[in-house]
Structure formats: C-alpha cells, structure tokens
Image (tube, one colour):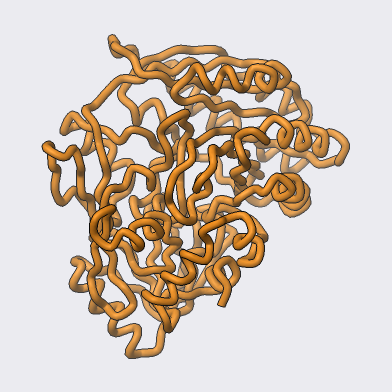
Length: 439
C-alpha cells in the first residue's frame, strides 16, 4: 500500500491495521534541505520526529505524536555508477519502482524480500530480507548511506567514511536519524529459475540441510494442521526466459493465492472450526511449477490478503528443532491457524542490529488474518522461538525489550552508545524505541 496508509482527521494507520497514531503535524519534504529544516523546526518546537514509509511494519516503530515525515517526494534514482556497480536512490523510493527502474537499466539487486511495496529506507531500517544461502538482507547490500541527524546536519557513511555509523545505520530502526538516500551494490540483470513444489513437512525437515546447501535461495511454507508444505527454490539460470503465463499467473498468484485465499480466511475467521479442513485444501491448491524470469518477478509476489505477522530469526542449526516444537504446540493447543508459516534463511552479516548479525540464521514467520485474535498463537510461538535465542524482526509483532536484546545481540551496547552520541536528546524517540533500546 502506498503512503496513503492513513485514515481520516490526521490519524496515521499502518498496513496491517493494528497500529495508529495522531501526529501533531505531517511534513512531506521535497528535498534533503527541506527535510533537515523540518528536523530543526521540530527540535525548536519540542516535538519528536519519525519518518514513515508505507506502513508495512506491524510494530509501532514509525508511530509518533510529534512530527511525522512522509517521504513520497524523495524518490527516484540519484546516480548510477557503472564503474563501482552501485546505485544511489532517494530514501522514499518504493522497492517496486527501484526494481523496475534497475531492470530497465539492465541492473538488479542480488537478493530481495517477497514484498516490494515498502520504501527503500523503511525496508532497510527494519531489516527486511528474503532468503539466501550466501546473499543477505536488503540492508546487507548497502554500500553507503546519507542521513539527517538530530542537529539537522547531513551525515554520510560507508565502510571508509564514518564506519562506526555505517555498521549500525544500515538497520538503524529510525533511531539514529532520518535516512535520505541509500547506495546499493547492484549487478548486471540476471535470470532466476524458480521451482515450486509441494513436499511433506517431514521430508523438508529431514532434507533441510541438503535443500539449503544445494540452492542459492530456498524457502518453504508449512500449513498448520497439515503435514504439507510448499517449497520454492530459486537458482540462477542461463535462460531462456520462461515467465509464468498470464492466465496461469493470474490463476495461481491472484485467484488462488489472493482471491480464494481471502475467502478462505473470511470463512475461517467466521467459523474457526473449519480452519483445519480449509488448511488441508489450501495446502494442496498450488501445484508444482517451474519458471524463469528476471529477479524481482521471481523473488516477489503480490500480497493482497491483509494479515498480522511475527517473525523470529533463530540460529540456522536450531531451525528443525524449533519447527518441530511449533508444530507440536499447534497440534495440541486447540488453536486454529489459517495462515501458513514461512521459513527462510540468511547468512551471517556484520550489521550491528541485523537479525543475522554474526550468525547464520533461519527465519520462522507466523501470520494471522487481519481481524482474527492472534495473541494466543503469537505468545505460544514466541515462547518457543525465544528459547532458541531468537531475534524478532524489528518491523513485526513481538514483546521483547532492551534487556532481552542486550542478551541476544553481542553488539547491542555499540548501537546504544552510537545513539547516545548522535541523538543525545532522543529527538527520534518513540514508545517502541524506548522499549527495544531502553531509555
């Protein structure tokens, strides 16, 4: 959804519908200078500042009662450097526009998440990721950043310039400043062959290490109340392009994955007892298919059914055990879970508060249809995932606080010390940051 994720009378709402805020004022700067001016003005007026993207976070990470900065005028590619193979892009650029613009230039990001509605800065600041054996999150592909800090000055950082800021600000949670531009490493446009096929839950777990090792990008969806999964393997291909046909694509991606799935969610919400039977049907609805296309058409897919999500990164070695515990919990709980559980991986990276910081990681994401009570399920899942030293996605529902994060992130103190230096007066503070970073 575009930045129109707002309601009437100045109320801002997120995409999932579970967070709202009433900022004192909203600003839509048309340049970095205007944005810096808005930050200085807010400071003079004693108001806190938050930049918002498209509201795709399920946490209140962007909520404020102060000044809400909307980035929709700060969009587009600033520069393409073909010598260094980097692209600098304005922070408010939606990922879908970046992906399409890069493809027209014969370029692509190496890896991306499965949704492309978010802004570049929103996606990177919260640690949005796809799945990959050797290629990491979107933030892990950043080579330089520009941000407006609390005193209204513009700071640039990279591995060579302000490296301590660069280490943290790539996934900065909006706590260090307002990101205004991002420089990504890119590569010549390539083709991916996707192979999607159903597989039993037991087989996926038994063969997980092998499936991970043999594919550049492996992920799967498990349908609770069933022993069924849908697996997806994406690997580079020499071609030729063989995209999903328009009719088949509409049938599988729109009709089944969005249309019928939406109806199934409505039925499940109205009559929870039907959920296990619907899950059996849903888990068998999508048949095996193989197609070859440019990266963003393979990595990403439309998500029109609204949901609320919690996702944890656990050490990759702990994945199979954690999933078995999750399945056992659902089976004995009496919960009715109508949304599949998504499983992905990422290699260790060197970003201070990245969910994959310093350790090879696997992601377990649990979802509930918007409007259904999710607390009991998420609480039970969170208990399992935190027992494996799980790190929650910064933009998805969780109940963790600074005390917990200081235990699961060895470099947590590095981040908070940098924040003390860059934002001593907590201009960029909100309730969420107070909870996750401490006061």
